[in-house]
Every structure is written in structure tokens, then in C-alpha cells.
Image (tube, rainbow, N blue to C red; front, side, top):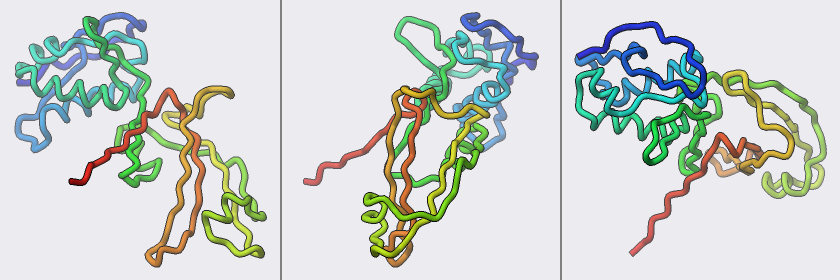
Length: 209
């Protein structure tokens, strides 16, 4: 069953969104699970600024009743949106549209642009400078350089939906990465400073018997 189509209004933050105003539609003939269809729709609404950070969202029950489905796929959708920071869910309170904190899994290698596009966001970058220079000790060690070798240093400012990095003094997630080619030769060393209010890091550890 599909929800009614309607134009989303432009409520102030804190105003409770009604599920039947979101224009949610489920395609019963699609191979995409219902919960993924719901997630994609909410992502799109946030991307178009029709749902904004701080705005009170509808409950699981509201969405389930509007779409004529059980709560299970809706709960799955809410959990996924929560893991992406697009929904903030506190016990006993209605969900609130979040800032879009991005989980960082160290066991998965994805480029910045690839990861942002996968989440329905718009990535971009501004080159702050590029120069051929003598490497710092940390860089020389990571790339296993000889004393006479030099490196190209590229500095970029990343944007998500045209919003840059945090203000000076804000907490940051500091990531150092070394990239190797097929012969295990180090070819790139990067230092990334990620907004602490937009990222969460996860590491999965498996205990061997």
C-alpha cells in the first residue's frame, strides 16, 4: 500500500512532522526491501532540506499506519537512519532529525566521495595548496623514503552538502592512512581531520579460540 502524495511543508525546528505529509511511497514490485525504500526517501527529504536538523520527526507507528505495513521494516529503517546520524532517538521521546554523523569503519576502504554519495550526500573539495617539498620525518618513515627523495603535499578542505569542516578548537577525529600498491610498496600517506560531531568510529574485534 502506498501513502498519499503531498508536498512537504517547511516547518520550524521542533514542529512534529506527520507521516502522511512526507509523500512516502513503497514499491511492492521492487527488489529493494521496504526499510531501504523508507531510508532512501528520508535521505532525499533531508538532502533537499525539506527535513531539517532539529525538526521533530514522526514515530514508527505513524509511518507504519500511513504505509499500511507492520512496524518491523519501519523499525529497521529508523535504526539505519539512526546509525547514520540522520535520526536522533531518545527513550520516551519522538525522533528528531540529526546532523548526519557518518560511521567510520576501519575495516572498509572507501573514498570520501564514494562514501558520501552512498549516503545520499553531496561531496566536494577545495584545494588549499599543493607543493613539492622535503618530507617530514613521519611521512618519510611511512613511505620508506631515502634521504634524497621528496614528496608532493596536497592539502584539501572537504565539504558535505556545501558545509566545510568544523570551527577552530572543535574536537576532531584524527586518521592516518598509508596506501600500498600490489607489490606492497607505500605510495601515499594521508592525514585526515574529521569533524567529531559528524563521525563515529567502529572497530570489530574477533577473539580467536
